[in-house]
Length: 216
Ligand code: GRF
Image (cartoon, rainbow, N blue to C red; front, side):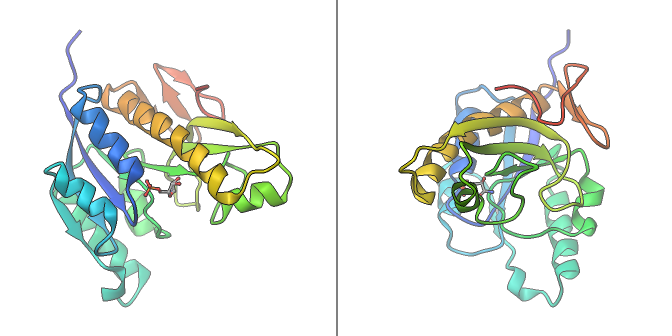
């Protein structure tokens, strides 16, 4: 069996970049057959950019404030990303709603992590919403990105019990620990050419995954 070549990743961030760090670490440990070609942020001075620079990865800041419309921004973002000829574009805390201008050309090559058990709680404030609803569990979801907000074929989910004394912060911390496991796992499957998607489902090792993705 031939060994797939290393895949080119572009990671988009808007903040602390702890998920980015998980990718940097797994690449460094040689457990992800990939190289991170560039990290792009829509916000200058975020900590994730420092993490990338410390790892010797090229960075680019593309401020959304410089563009008149969301569509203009997405066109510029797409061309910035395509410069690197990515096999996979990874949204890692990239806090922008993306239009079809960006998403459609990248369908099947664009992944996101969302801090809820999708399809529950798309959008913001997921942990507070789960606590307010007295849910017994929360979690995170890695999915291929479709043009629907926080939609697209689900690859893998991690579940975390909600404790009676949980605050948004304590719950977010425990969910984040799981994110750092499931996101590199999903990207590893992709880079090993074991994972792709059709319109509604992710397909792993030739098996169509259920709508909740692969079990952890
Ligand atoms: C994570 O909770 C992720 O699920 C959400 O944004 C947060 C990013 O955290 N989309 P970090 O920047 O990777 O630390």
